[in-house]
Picture 1 (cartoon, rainbow, N blue to C red):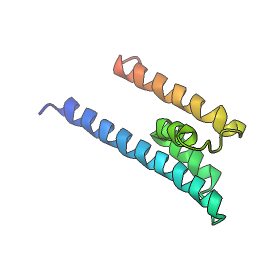
Picture 2: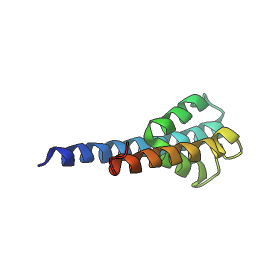
Picture 3: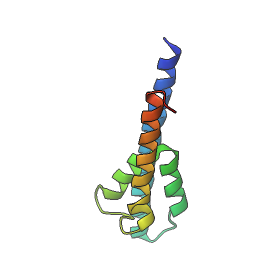
Length: 97
């Protein structure tokens, strides 16, 4: 197996894992908000988006009951993070970055 293929597989595995984790954290936080228990901090929800989980975060915000969609840092911040991550991925793919 070629080295670049192994690296690509690791990126895909990480991407899937971090987005599933991000989606799950948003759904858990929504459940916690209903039960009035200790919540997941907004900083942690933003952080998981920054480290690659922005797609999972967006899905977690909009699937089912809307969660965190009225807060500007989530409504605009996470899509901005997704745009930046996608731009970097495209630039790296075409060896421009």
